[in-house]
Length: 313
Image 1 (cartoon, helix red, strand yellow):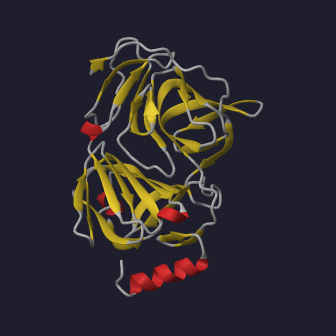
Image 2 (cartoon, rainbow, N blue to C red):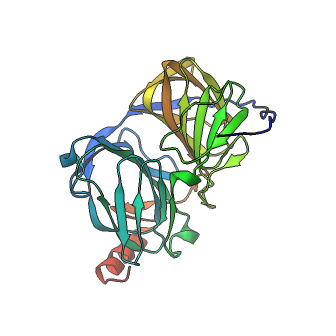
């Protein structure tokens, strides 16, 4: 962990508040992997540009061991953030890699790819998230690509109550508060916190994706880009956020969709909190969505199905 020179925190004027609070829907995907769908349900539809968010987490091998055998994608990006466990991915373009605890894969399906995601373990805990991010029409038929990012390349910032960075490091499976005076540790996957940028590059949506740990009863103002749509998902402890007429408690397992604004005021419960904060520039384009294909028109969906069936992915 390296100390960094003090810098003044930005002046913030427009706090975000909770527009909608929801709890995920149990479901399964792949070859029967059990998960919780947090975005992409009747209770919580997509939050442009984010199409779907799944949380998976279990210590029961029978809930994950069958994995996600080969399946196609076209027209969007998938983001896998591993908290626990190991997952091997392979695709029909010759790509292969291993997701380990604390790592991220940001896959751009573009014009089409067929890949698999299979557990590289037969016992123990498997836990993480998969987020689907839409692509604009101009990028839907671009060449596929991967950004495989190990934890050693993901900065972790130690912040004080003013949001000032006290120190930073990398290589952590999970963010841990360990600097004197710090009340929060923030792992930066995409976007920037306290002037330090995450490694993910996604020009169209300019995303923010951070994993935040807050000390018990700590408060933190997290800057966010005005005009970007976003959400918070708490997966440890509890949090209080501004809401219409007061505050809303966001408990473990809940997701809060946020209003616009230049920052998010976080206040942890007495047990502290762990959460992801995600935001991005909305595309505001028509969405035609059929299973693993996300395009702009029904004709493009029919073309995607025909191309896949003809082996053109």
